[in-house]
Image 1 (cartoon, rainbow, N blue to C red):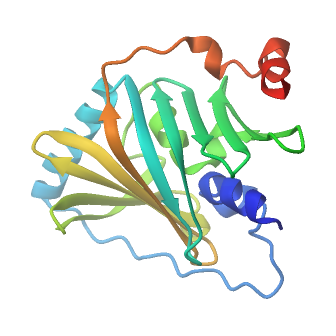
Image 2 (cartoon, rainbow, N blue to C red; image 1 turned 135 degrees about the vertical axis):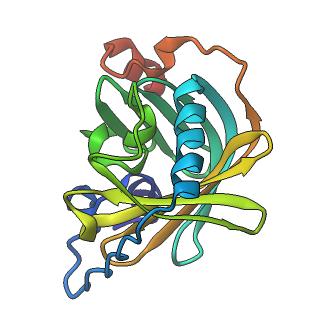
Length: 220
């Protein structure tokens, strides 16, 4: 797989049956962490996290993405809840990722080739839901404070071996600052946000990749 595909796949590959690199021959599945019982204090914190995420409508931020092998990329991220997301990678990376209408498109600007996967198969599909609940089909395995941040680790309840996602927050005031995805082979990808703005309102057309004019503009 080319480096550009690895860059895009690293962001998409939450739970690995959908990840382009998940079926590499000889790769051993990463052991899923055994969930520990959540304390009353943990549940209170998770309630605060849910309230914050459900109240969050728009994020525009710069991001730095670092893969397991140290490869890095950066760009500008938009998350507009519910349902929309856009990651514009800075040159020389040609990748663009856009979520809308329950799908995520990965577009290679150099090759002019789009590919799509269901948003529900990506790590950030959770953040795009209309109502976010850290229970039911999501199992939280750890609530930790370290390094000055609150870290909440989770996996899909029905598929704990597929991979896990850790969301990292500042607490005062609460703000999403980072997420780390560990896929089924134990490969970690970390995305850190900075220059965060939650007040801007984008033109929603920037997420509408099902509009033929969207790809026409990208090819110019």
